[in-house]
Amino acid sequence: MTTTINRRSRLHRKEHQAALLFVAIPVLGFLLFTLFPLLFSVYASFTNWNGISAPKFNGLDNYVKMFGDRYFLKSLWNTLFMMIGIPIGLVISLALALAMNRKMRGTTFFRTVYYLPVISSIAAVAILWQWAFNGDFGLINQGLGLLGIDGPNWLQDTATVKPALMIMAIWKGLGYAMLLYLAALQSVPRYLYEAASLDGATAWQQFRHITVPMVRPVTFFLIVTSIIGGSQIFVEINIMTPTGGPEFESATIVWYIWQKAFDNLQMGYASAMSVILGLLVFIITFIQFRLNRRNQFSID
Amino acid sequence: MSTQNLVTTPPLEPTEAIPASAGGAGGGTTGTGGAPRGRGQKSAKDGLRLGNILTTLVLSIGAIVMIAPLAWTFSTSLKTKDGVFELPPQWIPDPFVWENYLRIWTAGPLLTGIQNSLIVAASVTIVGSLTSALAAFAFAKMRMPFKNALFLGLLSGLMIPFPTLMIPQFTIFASIGWVDTLWPLIVPGLFGNIIMIFFLRQFLNSIPDSIVEAARIDGASYLQIFWTLILPAIRPALAAQFILWFMAVWNDYLAPIIYLNSPGTQTLQLVIANFNAQYAIQTDYPLIMAASFVALLPVLIVFVVFQRQIIESIALSGSKG
Image 1 (cartoon, each protein chain N blue to C red):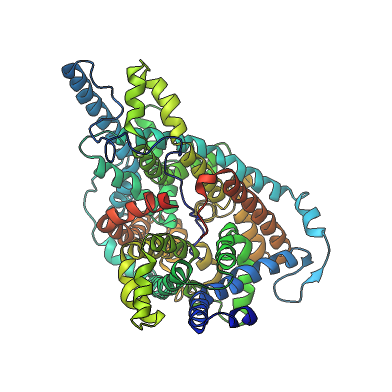
Image 2: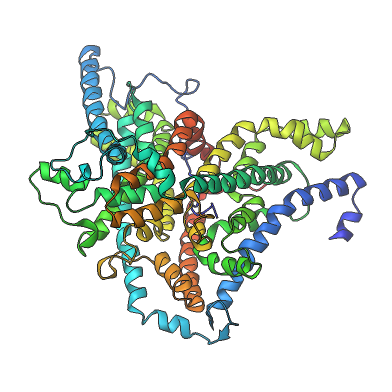
């Protein structure tokens, strides 16, 4: 490195030194708290390790074990299943954004109200929804009772525990997706709609052929980030169904990793699962970077 | 770590095939919700008004649904222990038991929880914002070898979820005896936050390089330039990112639950989770809800006060990407 710099002027060298010093701290942080742990996770995933004594190499045992572990497969299935909530949330968010894109009073107020759950602590949100889902005295079943419906004991019922968690996740994430959709809608050129209506396009046709394509980059972005976030659900499970729910119906991957690593001290096995999770997230993020060219930043 | 929620740049701009404005400067702001104009002014206006009323109605119902769980929490927090189980439920507690908000301080380590959360969130965000801003300055405005490689390297860290890193991180901190202290929550954040570096760098790209060069010719050092020119220039972006980061650290749960086990070291989120586990057995729901509401309140207040900056930075800073 120094030989190339030496040829340049003293001024440049000083600038290089100062710049490298300024970025040294985050780079060091990256090496210590991201790169090294990542490599260590990969290494540990090939070992039998309890976190206390030295890891013992056991080849692919953890990975083989994983795909025969019905609790792992169940957590994986649960995690994927709960992603059904993502498209539902997006449709509602887009509808809300369309409604708020009108010129009328009160949109700022509505925006604030819909955004409140997004900034609320997930721990507190989980606690209050656990109470809201209470079978006998919870808010949800009270509301259903008004409609003459006898609500289930949401979090204790194998059929309803996942839908309950999905409802909560949709409620919490709605404001964020709505905000991004609103920003996207506001950047759609007005004349497109004017031209379309002059040509006699109906409101639905305008929506279908102008709005939807114009917000597609945001939809794509939201799907990817929601999948990444959804693959890491933990807090709700830990608080609302501390044992993984009835018959393990609400256990998620991260919850299971956490339990194996810090409750059962099977750190080698947990590392292997965390590597699989990391790989999954990496692939999804990579696809996002590749497919969505609009999303790339320019490197000068 | 506070960066569990991966935030990259949402692509908000329309595709390039279509020019951004409709001939007129900045595009017309006269159009309303895509409603066609020119079909007879009067009927269009009436239709618009009806549409607005209907939309407001739907949004209001939605708003009630959104706010109901929060309102229900607050309502529950003011009830008696038995009032919670009354059927049909009362939305307005009778009597109001404000005393619940006194009981929570002695019922668990709520105050130390708030203190711990403040210590972690403040130290991480204050120091981390400075280190992030310095790095963003270097990445945006200075020449250095391997600049793009370093930046891309840092960015690649965003693709790795925290759960993949948490086991080795835990072992590292356990080996130096930091388990059950706040250090494992503080130290990684002090090294900066790549999301913040990314956005500040984007922001700095819109500031002309000539400012820095002029200051150099005047003999200012890079640190002086950073302090007197760059920091004031990026203040709005820095403030918004600071608030977002502060809220993320304040609300974090996974990292604290891994490291902290004694009541004296727990952060607020863990304290209320323990309230929940402990007092649900005694069916003291008012106490749980009061504690949860206290945990929610600071962030709600910060949001309402700074909502314009926060919302703009979420919705718009990405569009520069």
